[in-house]
Length: 509
Image 1 (spheres, one colour):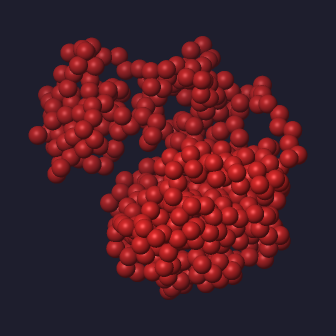
Image 2: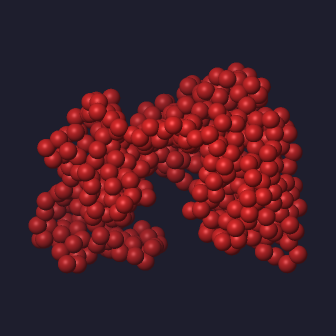
Image 3: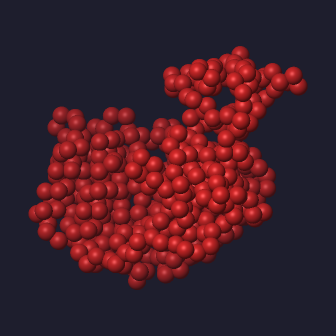
């Protein structure tokens, strides 16, 4: 690896993004290959120089740390991945009683529990916050029944962290110190910002004791290099081979051509034909990335205190480093598939999901057509239940998940779960039908107003100060943006209230 060229590339990337400070480490299983600091610790007057040992918030890169903690407790026989967590916390409750009986640590750590994605960067930092969070879970509607599909959830990882607390009787942050930081020699890593003087001048530091396991570790590139080094070295006694297999096996399938998915608290994909373990994280201005390719003995860690202009180029820089080191290119064959495909009629319908809005799928003579944001593409199979297409020169991937009854209830669209909310790709209605949706609905400070413009139903959201075109699913259901809205009506058909995302009831004003 040309270290001088690498340093020039890193510095150019951070300068272009206007990053105040950052640190990078490149590591193999036998130690650090290269590490450096860039810029300043912050924007205040007199801020010191950043080094590879400077502290950064990890955000969601905390999740693999929590996963490592749980796996080590599993190896000691304290926890089991497949035992329902009610065995450990008998009072555990969810809105769905049957679902509460089913949830396991494996589901929590792989985002397959059905818990929704909920996070707040600011909150109480008292030691009882994890328990309060878990006791408050019944207020949230499940995104799906446990084990049915995959959806990213901070609540799941936080709940797993509390299970470790409940069983051991020790505070989560102390457990990580004992089971992860100290054994790996991560001496500068902590969950307590007061232990790192370099952070004391940072205004508005994030903090919330309820989300420690998912988001609030503080570490350095040098320390995270030791964590990555452990991932690369299958003979490292820190984790057994069984634990490593569990961590690096896909539990939440993204249905993407690179066979990517979510393992035990870590993301998985393939780079130049080799399995890659990775996670990134973001909280306030902080960004964090860790990518490891065990078979090629290389990992890259990048931490920064200015992420907003860097996010789209960070992975490009990391892959330049990986490519430079992995000079022997793998022989990656192009995707081709001529095997059997599922019953395409099961795929038809309208789907909606976070970040994706709504999408329609139609089976036309044995060919699937996907419409997303008004653009249509033909889907070609690359597996029995997974397909690709192209919209606006971008590759789109769609995977269809069948439940135990053989029905498709979720589509994974570019790795994002979208629920089938209607069996119809397009609901036929007449303009007078639109009048049945008009009205204003309000709860506390939230207000939604439905109106018709150019024979299209729109929903104005006061919170976002924006108007969204609505996709009509049926007489009582619409999607506005990526929000599912169900209308409650009197017998005469007059709307009285709406149910937002199946959980928030808003009366008609």
